[in-house]
Image (cartoon, rainbow, N blue to C red; front, side):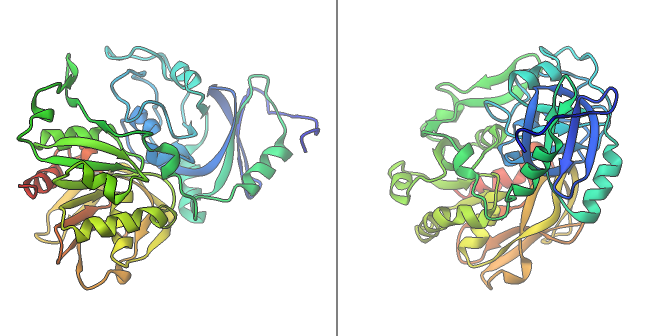
Length: 391
C-alpha cells in the first residue's frame, strides 16, 4: 500500500475523509497537512469551537460541526480548556473566513496548523450528521494535502485497522504528569482570567478539593474555586494513599476520553477506597461513569453519543429542566444501577441516564458538563452543592 501511486483528488479538493466502510468525502483542507485516524462524531454547539477542540474528552475523535460558520471569531489564548488541542481535526461546512472579533489574536486555520490539527471544509455536514445518526459514529481518516494527492488505499486500510474507542484507555494519555495547585480564577471581559494567587483560591479557610484528572477541563476548576474551594489536581493513576496524604476535604472525578471500563481497571479500586473513607465526592462525565462502575453498574457504548451545548436534562427531584452541554460516547446503563445508587437526572433527547447519587455515601455525579454554562447558569448549583458538603 505504501508504494501505491497517489490518487489525485477532484478539481479543487485538497482534503478527504475516508470512512472505514469505503466512503470517500472530498473537501478543502485547511490547518495542518497530514492525516489522522479516529472516531468521527458531530457536535451541535453554535459557539465554542476552540473549547471543543481543546477538550481532552475529544482525544481520538474527529469533530463534525453542525453549525455552518466555524472560525469566524478567530482564536485567542483564553477560550481553551487545555494547553493544546486534543481533538484530531474538524469538519466544517463553509470555508473559514478572516476573523471578525476584537478578542481574536490568530485565525483558526493558522491556530490549527500551529497545533498540528487538520481541518476539512466544504463538506455537507448535514448529510454527514444524518448518516451518523443512521449508522452510528464511524471510524475514519481525515487527510489534507496541498497538492491534492492521496493514497486512498492506504487511508482506507488505516481507517479499517483502527480498533475504535471501545476498550481504549485514553485518560493516561491526557492526564497531568504531576500534582499542581490550581490558581486560576474566573474570567472577566477585558481582564481575562484572574489569578487567585494568595487570595481566595488558596485561602487556608477554604475546603480542599483534590481533583483526579482523567482529562479535565480548566473551567471545572474555575467553577470549584468560584463555589468556594481550593483545588489540587493529581494524575489519573494517583494512589489512594497519595491522595489522602494531601488531606482532602472532598474528591472530584473529572471528565475524560476513552472507554470508562478500560480506565476503571486502575481508577475504580482507588475510588472505592475514597468512598469507604466517607469523603464527599463529585464526578462529571467520565467521572460519573467511573462512579457508576465503582458501585457495580455497567457502562455501554452509545450508538452516536451526545455532543453539543443544547441538551435538555430533567432533574428528577423537582422536574426542572436544565439546558446542558454534553460530550460523551459511553453511558451508565440505568438498569444496572444498584439499590443504593439513585438516578437523579435523565436526558430528554433519548431518556439515557444523566446523573446519580448514592444513598449511603456523600457522593453524586452527572453525565453532562455544568462548567460549560450553556444555560448559562442552570447547573452551577452542582458545584455549590458539592462545596457545601465539605464543611
